[in-house]
Length: 365
Image 1 (tube, rainbow, N blue to C red):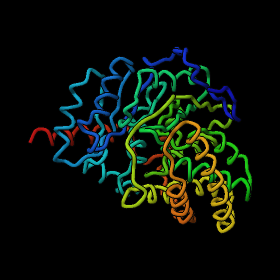
Image 2 (cartoon, rainbow, N blue to C red; image 1 turned 180 degrees about the vertical axis):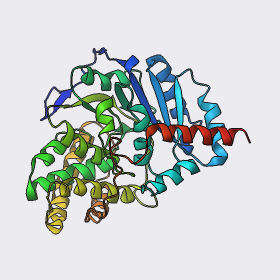
Image 3 (cartoon, rainbow, N blue to C red; image 1 turned 30 degrees about the vertical axis):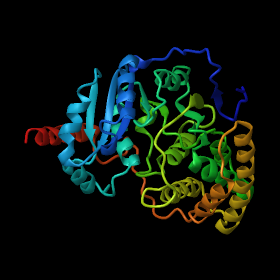
Image 4 (cartoon, rainbow, N blue to C red; image 1 turned 135 degrees about the vertical axis):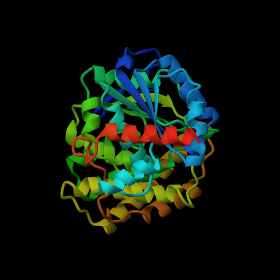
């Protein structure tokens, strides 16, 4: 336990606080994939939200047509003011294509679609559905800074489970990459990114106004891209980060489709896109070399921390991941970000209506 402050306001968990928060004026946005349907973790998250009593819950669902009816029936079993947004409904896909926003489905696009609906609330909280450690206090903790005039609140936590350190993509890629970039060519945006204890956490809260003004990376770059947007919109003074304790959820392999290696490529491109927006184009060869040196140093530090806490730790495997992630550092490529809803070529109500019609048509078959 510590009470160190960063360049952004850092709100700690000292074990006694139960902060007051405007949950009755907040929409909770939960992206849900078909694989989460019926899982113990998702059921725990949704049943716990019943006790939180938010103004509304929007479930941003990515599922095949054959499963939608069953998933919606399961969701109706929870005592929540719940709206299901079927993000991959064929008519929504068609309307996005007509608006020039075609592209593969991904978490970022799901959250972006959900933000359009949720932003008519005063506050919006976003979190995943796979946290086995989910507690009733999570939503109030994220909301509390917004009631205190911050506009963006980001969760941070320890990823410790089964006697091991997790959070590998954050620990071994994003944190050392940001520090390497600062060493090669520092800038205020990098100081902002470096202030976050867990930059890849999927748990954050925003005002409804800010939710309408955020552009979104459509895939795994969502979290890093959102930090870049928050820096532009509210800066250091409008940002807080909140201690959410220890977090446990699904783990991914390093290799293979949707593994950490593929995720690193998207996250790295999103981070470099944030820099490119500000005219920063660092020498990537120098960045890679600095990244490897920084990450290797962190591996030694994590090994010491793990030993101190009696945790299992495999430095050689961690270094192999560093090598994989180093290869993922590349030019940002084409800008695929989805526009802020204030600038979008379609209305959230259109998305809501198309989703409702598609769900009704599917469940009536």
